[in-house]
Length: 212
Image 1 (spheres, rainbow, N blue to C red):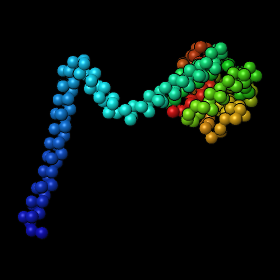
Image 2 (cartoon, rainbow, N blue to C red):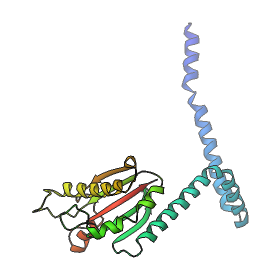
Image 3 (cartoon, rainbow, N blue to C red):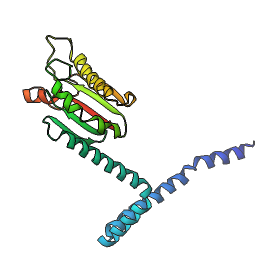
């Protein structure tokens, strides 16, 4: 290759970025022009455009709406089952439907054995869980007070054992073990400060997370 041809090629490669830069500037101008145009629209035109966009993206929007409806129905069903029981709540979060059992509802202090009266409460949930979509995570949580006596030597053991007890209960009721997983977080995922008795009570909990 001659020196002249080589120089021409190098010159061409050196200026190639200008094409991409010009495209970027054009897109940026188009974007701001669109923003300005939208800001100038009256309400009727804006709603018309919004409707057109919803229609264009209905393939994406429809599954989202279906999921939201199913989630609301699941929460309503769970709340209906536990409406007469204090210390249990159900809500939706980005990670799924969360059912929270407050301190003392399921277990005595320092124990992972489900109380007899708690079995009656838990027995209401398998019919709902069996028809619910997704995986189910059972989490055990404690406050930050070290265990001084009893079967378990740490809050890690206690929180994990409690989650395991709930899992075993649901399996005996015929729910598919493949849908479940458990976790014990001890005091390391608090929902309140541990500097008051009220805060500690909130942190001592078991949660079911019914995944998306």
